[in-house]
Image (tube, rainbow, N blue to C red; front, top):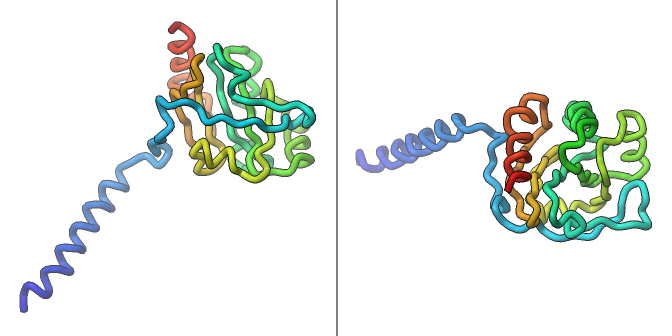
Length: 176
C-alpha cells in the first residue's frame, strides 16, 4: 500500500531535480552539434543582387561571421548598431542570412539602419537555417579558414559579448 504512494512521490522528486538543473543553465548556451564540424553548404541568392549567389565555399581561407537575422526580428534591431560598429573596424567579413523574410522588408530594414554585411543572402523558406541548427533569430556563427564552425552565439550580439567573447575567438582563429 505504501509503495503505491511512494512511486509518484519519487517521480515528483526526480522531476524537481531535473527542473532545478535546467533552471541553473543559461538559455543562450544551447550546445550546437555543429561546433567543430564543417559548415553546412548552401548556395543562395544575394539579397541586394539576387542574380548573384553566395556559398560558404566563397569564404574558404578566411575567418568569417554568419549572422542570421530578419527584418521582423525585434532582437535583430537591438544588435544591428553593434554589427554596424563591427563593420566600421573591418575585423571580419560579416555575411548575413536573412531568415524567413520578404525581400522588400529586408531591403527596407537595411536601408533604414545601414548595411553591416559584406553580403546578405535570402533564406526565404528557412531550410538553410535548419541545416545550420538555427533555433531562432538572431544567431551568429564564427567560421574558420577551413570552413569549420568554431562558435555559435544565440541571441543578439551585444557590445559586451563582442568584446569579451567573439572578437577574441576571431583574433585567435586569425593567428592560426
